[in-house]
Length: 222
Length: 146
Image 1 (cartoon, rainbow over the protein chains, first blue to last red):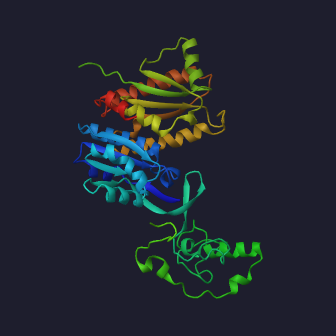
Image 2 (spheres, each protein chain N blue to C red):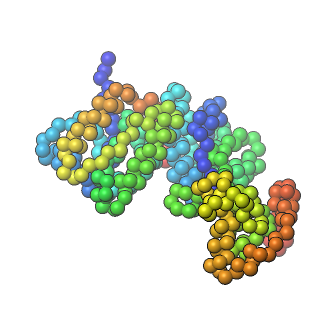
């Protein structure tokens, strides 16, 4: 999922200070799962904003809505009625959702309520960790299902650096050394010979090196 | 000046604090009528949104009362509740309402005196803090948003 964290309240309050009627939009997808921008978080933020402004003697009218997905124009269309009554929009979705709203409703200011962080997985209740960087050329099949791009701090492709100590990364001792994990997994799978194979320099053009990316499925695209 | 009478919402676990409140009543212990009890099946059922909505709708303080550590009927509901209380305290501090308006207390079903004393203490504390700064908000408007 795409993970996110709510921005500091001070920043959000400053964004909304000039407005009196806002639409607070949540998303039922990734940000719901990572408890950053689902229906419940919309309710909590709405109350927090109301109280913050009431303290200053200002009434802020907030309408709450949570869309099934904010990254699809079909769902964004559901905002038409509510958005017409609002002076500004605050989105609790990832950056994709915020941009979809901005694209569809060009005349309305849109503010992000969360900082979009990374593509990650849930390690335990309330803990999410980065797992994928969307490099566009997946090597998980060779590395035993552990990604050296997202999980090695230095994105090394041929074994660990000299900073790997007792299975931990020198950048942060709380982080597992990706190459230790890869080696352990290779051993468990009996494919240690993969470790000996020299991986050529990665072609980063499939990643962000080639600029913003687009996927076109000819059979589906109109 | 009119004396400020705070409204304090107390989410009380059915297995401990709610029974303790009952016990306080049976023992004829006096505690301030400012405490408005909401019975919940476990303090772990109380979510951040319940606490903040209570404050938004005009409560001056919120009390979450759960079982003693290790005594939760659902294993760790009280621990979960205290984490949510901490989260809301931080959020209230961030918006300048003050996290001290929310408290988590632990007690057993037999602690009638403890419940009465907690009620006295928190009422005193909220009275010192004064009314919830967001109280002038019109409740009718808030309910339309839900």
